[in-house]
Length: 272
Image (cartoon, rainbow, N blue to C red; front, side, top):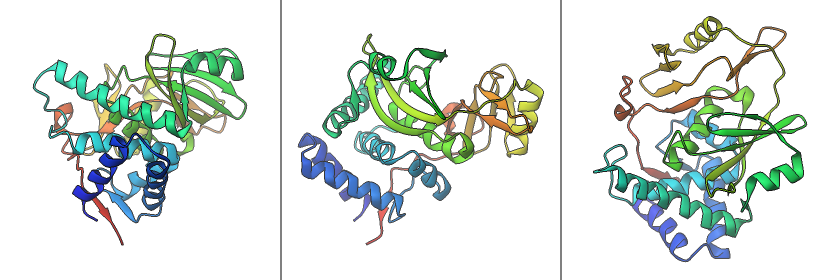
């Protein structure tokens, strides 16, 4: 099966409104993805492993968001105007919302549901709210930083690739009381102490990144854009190990204007 046939198959599943047969087929594609028999060339092999680490819900959502890109006829980052871009972003959200409802991983009022089950919010940032769940925390991640759902899903894939000690696992999707779309993830709880910006910079450079701007804590490689690495998003254990618990991480395409050369492929190879 080539890329065109694969994306056409996903399009039929979406058009049929995710019948039980369609949901089963999506789960089968996720298993092929996890077994490296379906190669999604948006990602490197290492990054595809990071996507798998996010769980089957994350894998299926990533493929469905990829379908919206692959069949749109629009090159990522090259929208004729902001209105068109917003409409394209809304289509990604609507597809995932419909699938998540059929799959049973949708929460109509995510904050109410999490408050009822986990208690009050223990932390809140620009895009996420955090709840205590014992050895894990549960986060709701919005799209304010990304606009496009596919980039927020990429962010989870790449976080798991480069920072596996604080793995993000997608457990569902929902909306808050204002109707804002949320990705719901869990993550290991890390106890530690604050880290200085100099310590963060030294750690990230050792990982192979180059500093781009201290103003917004941004680093890059030709493939990866990494930002928002301030002292509230990084923690140090008592033994001195540094953990990145939150960041803005993306495939470094040229339109991000941070010396990136990453192509955003829609090619899929299925090994029969």
